[in-house]
Image (cartoon, rainbow, N blue to C red):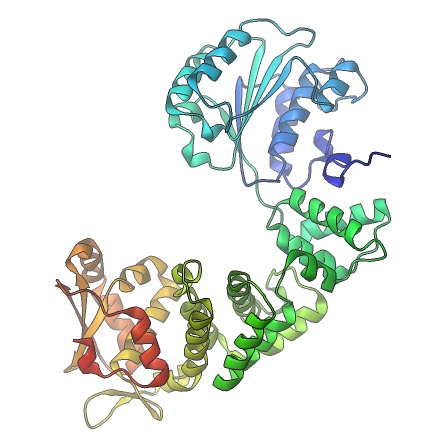
Length: 491
């Protein structure tokens, strides 16, 4: 017997059944009630959040025998034909494969003719941003003077690619991603309807994997129900989807916390021997430390979608790190983002990153030590028991700036430290980054104030342009792990 997949079987058929998009539902219902319908609508948002579903519900609401109505009957011939995708008056077009000017000219010609049986002829163009420039120009004339019997609904995942001339002639609705908690609740309801046995931990893992798309979550649950008909556990989700087990991220963070270099090398060896995807692991590490920071800042009211036992474990681990270390670690991890997806040596990259993060716990000064910093006899700032080298001062400056002014921190990433003499830190940027150098010069006072806070004494800052390329970032990181950077190397 044929079986409908969950995404189709439980697809919303009325406005009141729409999930998450309350602002869209309420506005569309009022427009129908007040007869204030637009000629064209633009539905923007990520995949799987209900854009095409809403377009179909709108089409039924306008053409239903009882309509126009906010509550289509779903039993009349008009409604059933639209639900079955066989209505002659509701034309769904894939913008990716029907994107030429000839396709749009054909649409314009057909739009002139009145509906075959309904009140309106409704064109739903999915991924409208894929239309060619000439096709958009051909469509523009119809949007400017549309026939009274025609309505357009455009759906796109990349609204910035839709020309402003088109957008200005549409009523725009932005569909938001569903939160993991909202997806989990939806999946729990579906599981109850279908008699699917699934644990709370498995539901949460599916919800996180769906990344805001309810449809994706429903599809994963349907797949798992066939894979494990006797009951779905967290291990089943991780196995089927190739997820890195959550436990590994806690273990990894514990090794970073302990500064255990040999342990980290062994951990990464086992990670690769087990066949886990390094991109999946890298993304999970970023998310784990981000969640730790959120828990450290907000406690149990952090707003994260976590199970009770996860919250308690997160609180303990976040407290062991502290906010300063978590900020430093996140800054260090994200510095590898560009390399993570393109490196030919992912294992080496993870080893270098991990050792750097673990090494930083003992070489970077604690916040309290920084506040008590005093100059030593050589004139270099000292934080507690740790002499603050130029490399350390530079690292802390980037870290703190990133925490409060990410845009300015981005300009700092283009620079390299050159010298620390007479309480003045000199940095340089390649000549091609002249605009960034000017921005840094405009913010010299604020940066100098941050340096003074780090060092515990006034530290000046000078910005120069240089024709020499910036020092190789990877070499500098490796040097910081296996030995201090000699300042002469930075000249």
